[in-house]
Amino acid sequence: MNKMLRYSSLTKKYVMALAGFFLMIFLLIHLGINLFIIPFTENHQDIFRDGVHFMTTNPLIKAMEIFLFGGFLIHILIGIILQIRNWMARPIRYAKANNSQGSFFSKYMIYTGAVILIFLIIHLGNFYFVKLGLTEAPEGMTRVADDHDFYSMAINLFSNKIYSGIYIVLFILLGFHLNHAFQSAFQSLGLSHSKYTPFIKAVGDFYSIVVPLGFILIPLYFIIYY
Amino acid sequence: MNIKLKIWRQKNAKAKGKFVNYSLDNVSPEMSFLEMLDALNNKLIIEGDEPVAFEHDCREGICGCCSLYINGTPHGPGEKTTTCELHMRSFKDGQTIVVEPWRSKAFPVMKDLIVDRNAFDKIIAAGGFISIDAGSSQDSNAVLVRKEKADEAFISASCIGCGACVAACKNASAMLFVSAKVSQFALLPQGKVEAVERVQAMVAKMDELGFGNCTNTYACEAVCPKGISVTNIARMNREFLYAKIS
Ligand code: HEM
Ligand code: SF4
Ligand code: FES
Image (cartoon, rainbow over all chains, first blue to last red; front, side, top):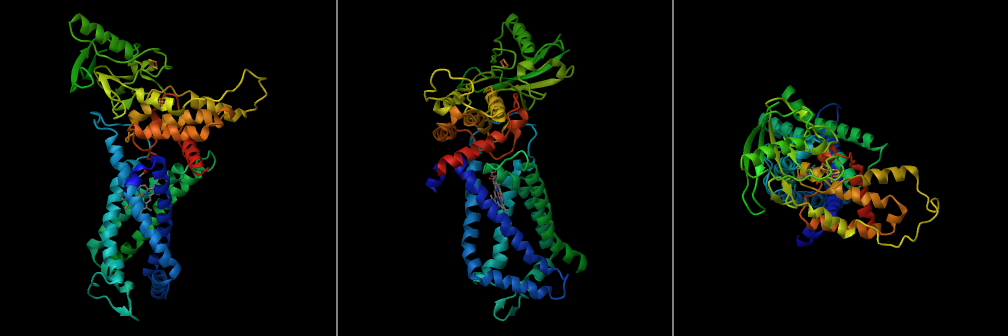
């Protein structure tokens, strides 16, 4: 921890950006599996269960899990350290708040991040800890071939309108986080180019809209059809 | 025109400051912002009050002294202008103008609107120079430099060290300034020789002096009177990464 504080501000940002990239790839894979909760193919349930089974048992993925947790932890820790230093860098605030332009969502990264963190804890409580056997499975969850059935569990959660509502709001905020984050991570790593940077920004806008929207489709489907 | 002013007054570095309201008549729209403050100070002196301390020197946008945070923007409204280049026609008759000093831990207020920008000099002293012996003047084409690189280095070197980037940044980060000063050398052959040591020394000094960390908000670029681009920051990120792994 002490050592982490002593690293240069730029080194912290490299690590933050690399961890962020990793998390963004993870998010994409997670979405790919989740979408099969929606019955747009006949065997969507089987595909979803196979996907979950693969992600929870494949040894390569298991190994990646360590990186994933490490990535989250490092991203969150450094994010908080940087934010505290940034607050300290201006002990006396302006009477007239800064009205300069610049990236809008970048001003709220710590807040959108904090909301993601809270959801993350709830989410782990709902799914991951159940898998580990740390917490009790909620009622109505059936076991299929000695595996916890995350499909029926997801159905269970999304049939709760309040949960679905919170879920939708959370993913909108995640979109805000990602909208700034995507291009910011490139800039932090020094990847800026007169030709390619506008393209990267466009991909970032696309990613930050399409990925959260994909996640939101699931509760939306339940709200509309149940 | 008549102008209402709300100005930060602070006796010295240790004193607790406060805002004081002033009203000034007969302000001409042609006046620069600093001339308007001169007029205010004349009035205060005649009335037996202490004039408002503010920093100024060239009054033509090249020295970077006139660091005033006006109505929520460093150097006030207007693109790519310093306070001395700002004119009263940018304001409305009867408008209230709030004037504050730069706010940053690394730039402590010395008196009224004057801050100590010595931190920038310390960063320059840490590595913003060339110490190799470049020899006596050579044939102008002995060292070849691409035109694009020369132009970029020139633009980076046009940073006047005003500190508006720090003042505007929500993190009070000095990245735009430091990256411009790293870039002006890194882009040219003479500067490349010590590039690895330079970028590390300057970044270490910047961190040590209590500037915040860059979160790529780009508020700096929006207020820079010299149009220094955040591509300089990306270049410094590259230079530093290269220095760390080489
Ligand atoms: C799926 C989850 C997340 C993803 C994909 C993600 C992604 C990113 C990325 C790519 C960046 C840009 C990094 C850079 O500019 O170098 C970033 C910045 C940031 N993230 Fe996250 N993040 C996630 C969750 C969180 C969480 C849980 C927090 C908790 C506090 C957080 C706090 C921050 C902060 C404060 C920044 C701004 C820091 C800076 O720009 O220096 N993020 N995020
Ligand atoms: S980068 Fe621009 S705003 Fe910052 S010190 Fe240099 S001239 Fe001033
Ligand atoms: S007084 Fe020199 S830049 Fe304004």
